[in-house]
Length: 98
Image (cartoon, rainbow, N blue to C red):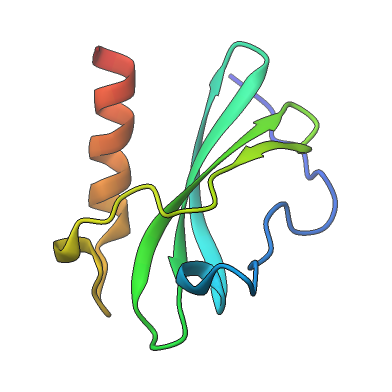
């Protein structure tokens, strides 16, 4: 059993200078790896297209690393109807079973 704890305000906000995540960031999925939290999240750009972003946080929620480019540039994922739960599940399975 584990206990969830709110860390305050939003952990991630859109970065307007990054076109691919300029409108919104949401639907994060995270795993703890040692003292870090690895997060993959849905990002939306101006034309309402979705892609996936990546961030690495410490356990208090402080961002240690955030990629300036999307996690993937696969054109098939750049869609208005991203099924992010499936993509995130595959990503985590690949990280934990390798």
